[in-house]
Length: 267
Image (cartoon, rainbow, N blue to C red):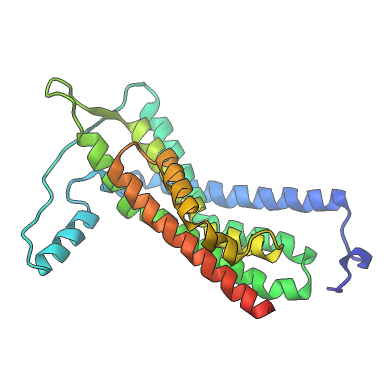
């Protein structure tokens, strides 16, 4: 591709770009739909995976117990049971459809990123293409780390606390299946997105909006903002707030490191 993309005789018109985008979205829809149908057919496996974080003996708790026992502690998590119910005639079926689509979208995410990369690559200069693949891979890996953190840490702890919290023995908790899957999906998606903070910092640094010195100067302010954001995106309990605040602040520090490294390369 020529360095001057405005004078490129092979450049597509606006209408042609829209047609390429339409075909891209159609291919993505086909792949997501196919994966969703496959996942829908494996109902038992799908809901075993989705329901695992709600169990009192979830792997996260067992790993923590083994670690504490290795340190000499006899601590064990108490057993608990929370009832999941369906209150509408179609709720179980619709939740099954929604969960299959969500997992299909998650499973198709590498292909989606690949298609988006193919779409934007013709508009990039040669020097931009050098780091675009690296950035795309980092974005995807950060997204997966956020998803895994939600699945193994954030959601199980939030569910254990909120599902077993009781104001009185006279009140019994019965969580709807729709609420469970909705909270699970929302937290998972949000954590995948907020883990993009270093990438956002990279792009803001590239266009000269943010400097590493600026982020270092406002560390304390950033911590307050992160805590507020964590309080908004998580269930209302202190433990979950702390579990989200710590990695978000670590990502803030990683963002500072990314900007410092980029500034040294351009100095």
